[in-house]
Picture 1 (cartoon, rainbow, N blue to C red):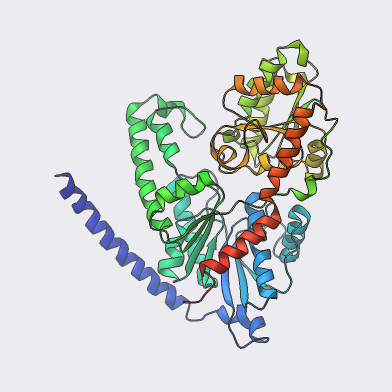
Picture 2 (picture 1 turned 180 degrees about the vertical axis):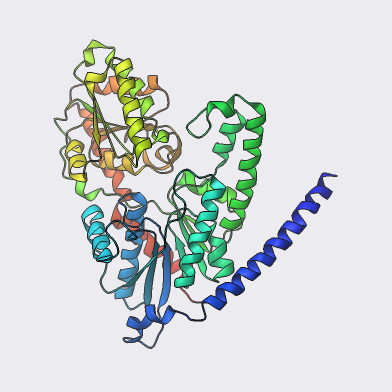
Amino acid sequence: MFQHFLRFILVPFVGISSFLLFCLRVRFLNIRKASRREQIRGNHDKRSNKKPLLIGFFHPNCSAGGGGERVLWSVVSVLGKLCDRGMEIGVIIYTTDGIGDEGMDGYEKRVFDHALSRFSINVPTTLSIRFVHVKKLQQGPRSMIGQSIDSMKLAYRSLIVATPDIFFDTTGCAFTFIIAKIVAGCKVAAYVHYPTISTDMLQLVWERRPTYNNDNAIVASPLKSYLKVLYYVCFAVCYGLVGSLSDLVLTNSTWTCNHIRSLWMMAKSIIIIFPPCDTKSLLNLPIQNRQKYIMSIGQFRPEKDHMLQMKAFSLLAKNNNFKDVKLLLIGSCRGSGDESRVQELKALSKSLGIEDRVEFVVNQPFSVLKKWFGIASVGLHTMWNEHFGIGVVEMMAAGLITIAHNSGGPRSDIILSGETGYLASTAEEYANVMKAVFSQDKNDVQFLQMREKGRASAQRFSDDVFATSLEKILLESNILQRY
């Protein structure tokens, strides 16, 4: 009976979807008759009879300064090196930046200057780069389905303007693959920072555990929890299908790779390549004579779990032997929601009786962060199932004794507990490690050796290692070969 029901639902759905995609492709090709492709290739054609391979990066906020943007410009830099060695390549970057605010006048220079100042990446001038500016869609909170539909709309508008040979998603918008592969006929590559949905998310809802994306109203209701699980399962199936359209998938950690492989089961190639981290600029910071500061870095988002840091520190603060130790929370706020969260954390510090020992450093430049990297003794990370952990790597490279959450990327790829840092899960576990560190002299041999080992281990994730690994993958995968 159930099989008949599925057949009754699925057959019409597949038929209608196929027909709509066919109509969409026909419309797309008709619009593309007045092709702008030659405009992009014009600069190359003057130098060579060969038409360059066009690689289009889908990165709506390419002028931002996060880890995703470091990956984007690092990939562009590698393509520039290949171009210098004679490979005919052109780059398109699809973005929603530059519309409004400062406008598009001088946009390219501003973006390139920002990449140099923020990431020390010099965008190659020999590489032809064109920005395609697309107007932003609806702002504010959106469901996973809503976000996915919006990303498809953006991709369609982008690809009508300029259609590449390879569509490269660097933001985790897997549903754009439908437009790129089926409608526009591109090869599809992706760098996945984290899966949009995972079995861990399903398990949280199924076990009715409250968290930042599973509020108490749903946890308290068996019916709502069941419906949410059903919604997640349906979305996961669709996510797996669209992800399987990809020709090359790069993932940022073992944790992410395992989840993507379990979902995108028909994807052609899924490879781990750790994201580039700024380790070089932190190597000269001293590891001796550190002050009694515990520092945390990361945006003030709910999943970063700054409350766990507060609770762990309050346990340490109860012991008079550690009354001169302070907690430093460094991070940025994306908007009013994050700003309200900072105020909540300040109120929590007051209720725990530690407000005079907790400092907040909000929305400060990297120079301020680097100064504290050279002062603090311990680095703290508390996000459950962090997909990789660039902040963890930076703290290790800076010579901090790093305590990260015993899950996700920090556990699978970054920290060897007791050797290059520590792993913890509960407030008590974090507090015990902090007590052990501050119970010893600041230049204790054991902890100096751990700082040195952590710094050496962090070099596995440097910009240079990323560039070498990526070039090898691109050349060996045949993604750069034409059809």
